[in-house]
Image 1 (cartoon, rainbow, N blue to C red):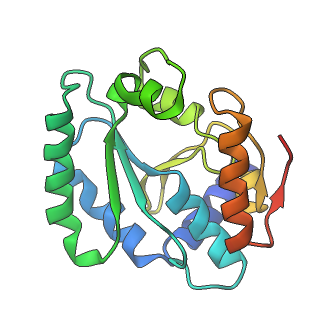
Image 2 (cartoon, rainbow, N blue to C red; image 1 turned 180 degrees about the vertical axis):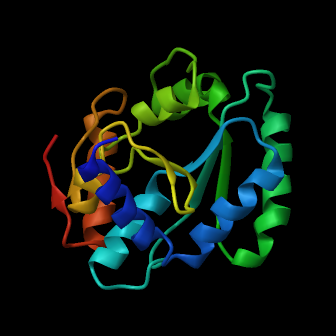
Length: 193
């Protein structure tokens, strides 16, 4: 890892630790014993946007995405059990936690978004497909040496730039997201589809 990337990760960490709920989720999540997991997407990006805009770190965050990858249990019941365990573990935080087994996304994606996808082979492959370069991020540790997966780097996220990741989403999905986000975070620079 080069010095610039280390500096960006340090900057990201300094921002994320301002969101107490996010820190608690990252610290407690290992107790769930989930196969390969990350806390990611909007809760990470929106914490950064909030802090960069001078607002409270947890402002306007709808949910916290705790994603994991368990190809050995693709059942809806298995995912619901994990979500129930997480609700108990994080119940005191007063947040909406969205727990998803990303190994099973292909089972419901067509009915929700209208087009089929092939099964993902890893959690990193999932994050590679998330809708924007700024929100394609997962964090698993915030200690002195954070564990961060950001396939597009951190420049867009830290620079308040929202750029489409066309790998899987549609223009309509992207536009709906950015319309909601720009209303909450008017300082964002939105790159058109």
